[in-house]
Image 1 (cartoon, rainbow, N blue to C red):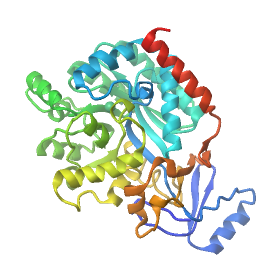
Image 2 (cartoon, rainbow, N blue to C red):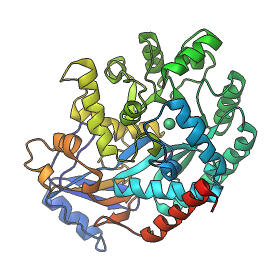
Image 3 (spheres, rainbow, N blue to C red):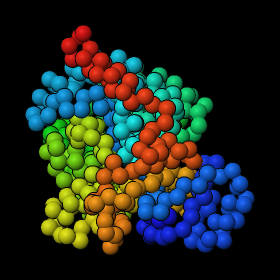
Image 4 (cartoon, helix red, strand yellow):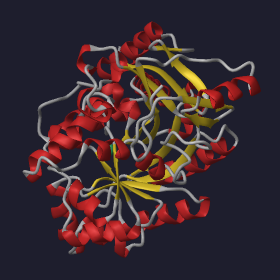
Length: 425
Ligand SMILES: [Zn+2]
């Protein structure tokens, strides 16, 4: 059995899990034998020829948007939003949002994502389904000026539900962005987040249009605007952060904001290239996200690993930019930190850490030979290579099968929902 830790380091040995946590990490056969003797009922999984590694953490996602996957592509951003995305969303029922979320979570779990940070509507309706599916999540309740008074009671309900649950689901306050939410409502969001001790997440500096609008309205950059309002701190997750000045980068790093880098989404909707190498040099915590399936169009974080590295190398003209091991850290240990877990508590293989683990089948032509395991995972790995997934010590996926979900029935229900939304029938 081989593991990748936050270093990342690989080794051959044994990993033991009891209850929700990793309680054994050893290269000693005698230690493994002692663990077996101590836990006679333990179920053993032979991972020879496979890689055991921390589950991946997707720090920016709109899971329910799977219903709009490939619904509107290759058109301008404003036409995309005005003519397709927003009309579609206005017709969705809460049950249909839950259906889209379920499809997204199933896709993520089967692809080795054990934790995700979501940002969407009706998140209070999503707490129970997410608990049921077994994944770990931060559910961000998205609001604009137009729906803030509807969303705030949903946040309170979601907090109540999550605090009565397993602890795997946390809630966040998620104003859409500095250009779609007024300063007054951003401050109301921050006050609510502080009242319930919740993280706050928002899209920051995603497009050139956003830069222009914020400069026209407030005479500064989106980062400066949010900083003046006091929204930037270590509980804040900023998605994208593409159009940032050197001073913005220093501010985000100094405030401890987690940056969620979404390379494929940024490429697909021509947002630009986030200066990941500058963020890393400034000491900012950078993580990886897929964004929604409208701008991606899948939820495969292995692809984001590869794309993130290639994009930095391409944009900087420097082949040493964003090495594979650093990209992997972004998608594991850094992601766990963005979700509010202490260093060493999640996203690593270490005794005491929460047992969110995946097994990757290395017996694939594109994963052989193995000169460098980390390079093979980052540059060659695919979601479909994941065969086993454990979250919180529970095996959810085994032999590429997700327990407890009837996939044909789910696809059928999704097909019916999108037909109703798009045709009214
Ligand atoms: Zn987004």
